Length: 564
Image (cartoon, rainbow, N blue to C red):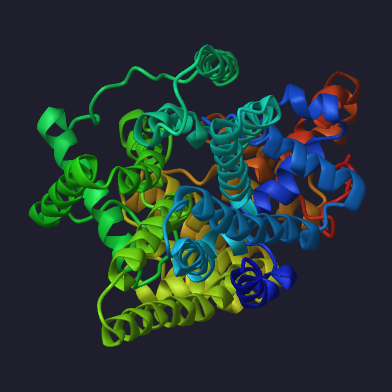
């Protein structure tokens, strides 16, 4: 029966194999991958995106996958998309097999497992994970955790050490793909507590000890590599009550989104509306009531609810640690949807059990309608992730008041060489004055567009306007780019020296701006007076440059070409 959801999922998402890059994919493919020259070098750069963009991530197997594709498949986008696609298909099958294990003893066991797998296969919120290269950690972590849980259930029923060893190894693989698996360690003893398939034995405690040792090794290794602060309590400036309100809002948002995934939106959207606190609190209380009910009457469903709830802990913790500007994301519901799918499988068993034929027909029709409802949504949402332009056009249509899509569309037009459309979109961004990061991205790209167009007068006017209206913001990168172009046009050394100073100032203010490193390394490489001193530094900066343009007119250009 597993072949049915597998086939539906394969056909539904097959088109993603030909998709391009979106959002963080550019940094991953063009910035991270070139740094991972060897496997040893990859394992040395476990901090964030391979040392290019420092983050709070510790995902060594994710970086190993990127290195593998870069080394053996020449950084192929098809292979990267295929990796996520195949992991998703395998997860669809894993949900079916897990359903068979957890619904064991039920008359409708196969039907419930099939329903759970079908819902997971067509769930529209999965599009972000399956169609997005950067979502490899979510896809892989979910797959290996589910197979690990299946192995553990079989160990508890058969007592074979083989299944125990498989459980331990696969859980370690899951946690090394993504940190979310860290909170799932409690699922194994909770399964024993709820199901009690076999008497508790010494080997079970030994297994728990092994899991705890794995977890501690991962924790301290992550702490040593990333140096995260796990002790921050409360949201900065919000206080305990504000923190509580924020947590309830986030959980309420995820609960509502799980039930009704529409409208679908990409993950950059900001925090939920605080005015909806009471609605969110009501949803949280309802879920808590379900948990109490399941504990008293349907403990099997309690495990499904915990599989849904536990993976939501890390996204909520993002609010406390400040490790991410993105608090709400559809991909955070990828693993929780396994628990939701199993809960719906359990509902199917209850609804179709006993009664007359009419009740069963209504039950079947209701689940068929739900599958169609989800499947149609997923089918319409998949093309949004085709490339950068389709992605941000979709966002712009949903949130025309947000400046982010205008900036991103302008960047996309800039890459395509359509300078007029790039300028039009970037000018329409209307970045808020307090958004310094947005200023940096928008106006530096706007200055680049005007400069590439050869409109130096307008470029200077924009710079003067920014200095006058927003004195706290100085677009060093955009000014450096202008001076670089002027040096190329006039062959005057002073422009390149000024550009060097501008780029160095930009690095001090925004150290993760990879493009700055690239142009600065080009300048350093061509300064004869300091060539020997800066040769090593230039190579290092080249390695850090995430968005190098191989067709750039600057490449190989000597700043002393005629202007010595």
